[in-house]
Length: 417
Image (cartoon, rainbow, N blue to C red):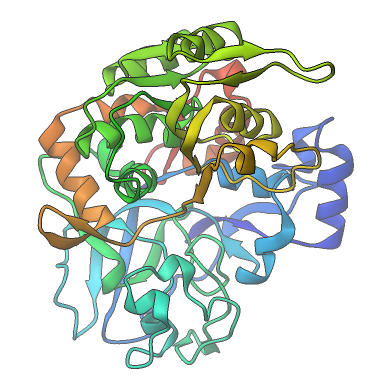
């Protein structure tokens, strides 16, 4: 089968770090660790496993961060390489193991990419995270497991897409454990369905921030996660003022269509929105402007840069909550004064899992799937670019250079072209 693989090597790392700002050949091309070609089709390792035909697979901001070596190396031990990339996956079931009951051949499914203890070969000895329904924080992620895949023990890794034994969605086909799969309604378009994974990230964060404040809420970021948080807050029942900080006109239109009551650009417009909450501005003898009073009781930072974290710390109200969803990593210069001075609460979220929802326990994927249909919001507008698998370099360039391309979510389609 055809696949886009990524391998972390010292030469590719040095090329990416030294030449990445000069040429994309060092990050996505011939000098990089990214390669396109034929690899063996995966085979089912057990009776509860499923073979999938990939229909669409998204490019995540974390993929760009890893391929350009801008992400922190702290998570590197919890992956295994070379790996077929792609953890945002819509697929069709083409083969099922004899014990599979969750899905049927021919069904479209969304893939939950977390790798659980059960998948690793420990179905009766799951770690606390997996018992609670959160394989994305599995405590065995740094270990080799007991499951044998194509003659090899399953290797370390948190998610499909950064795992050497479990090919991701930037390929023609892949395998998955049935517990990872969520059937997709015939009423849902492929574009909406491939967004279940990134939208579930925002939904998980929104649900974990209940009970919601009266408002206002600030969401910082222009990408699919930020826009997904806007949608998820409304889908989860937040009815107060919701301000989205986005940069470009088409992103502002998307934010409004997904539920933002106001949109602002970074800088003066965002400051004006803060002052409108009743905040007073003060200027220290040295340093940047600070504020007191008013503010946002809940801030979602979906960027994770030094600038946006700094903004969140200043814009949050006294005893406000700041949610980090933007893969924040090493921040060399960060003033944490307001964390203690205003008794702020900082929370980080990643991925998804079992949630309390409408009186029962549901997985975030199922909630997201159902709310896409229930709200009727135009979430598929987030998919701005679709490329054939063989044009992966163009797709990566469009995703990495979103200011130039206008991309929000870039998707690979192995069947196209």
